[in-house]
Every structure is written in structure tokens, then in C-alpha cells.
Length: 79
Image (cartoon, rainbow, N blue to C red; front, side):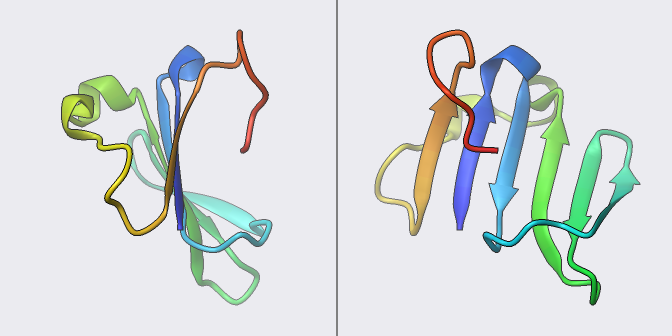
């Protein structure tokens, strides 16, 4: 599991499985589920994350997975 916050898009992405999604479904306004061909959730995108979540409590480290804060202006994208 990986988590990335894209500052330039204010988007939080939770990758549950590293496979490419087959299709997406907007479960709620600003919450997009990426699904495999057989319907499994492989990723969750939260648009306007700074408004929808408290990013101050997003920890880097001591988390069972990799957490990245990505600023496309200064680095490449992992998503």
C-alpha cells in the first residue's frame, strides 16, 4: 500500500494494489475509486484533499507502507 499527496492538484491517492485500474467510479463527489476488471478496489483518489481531510495528521514514517508528498514542480510523479 502506498499513499501519495500531489500538492499541485491537491489530491491524495491511496494505492491499495500496484496494478493498473481497468475503470474508475466516483463513489461520492471528489472520491474516486479505481477498480480492477473484476471489481476490486486498487486505488482511492481524494480530490481537493486539503478541504476533505486534515493533512496535518498525515504522517510520514511509522506507517505500514510508503507515504510520499509529491510536488510535480520539483519531482516526478508516482501516479
